[in-house]
Structures are given as structure tokens and as C-alpha cells.
Image (cartoon, rainbow, N blue to C red):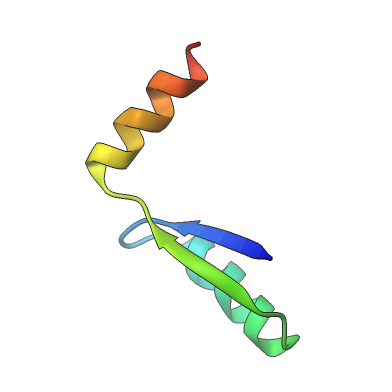
Length: 46
């Protein structure tokens, strides 16, 4: 399964979701909040 991580007002996220929908590819969307971004940054620094 494909997971698309999105942020508010993200044109790349919107374009990616539209492209997948046009091709009939099922995906799950996961909204990244400011808290989520901080966790990702922490994990990247391990």
C-alpha cells in the first residue's frame, strides 16, 4: 500500500494525490502536523 504524507497547503502533495487518483492507484493519506514534523526530525537525527 502507498502512503502519501501530506501537509497543509502543499502543492506537491496535492499533485501527487491527483496523479495517483487519475491512474486508479489506491493510497492512504496521512496528514503531518507540526508535532509530527518534529518527531520525523528527531528520528532523522538518530
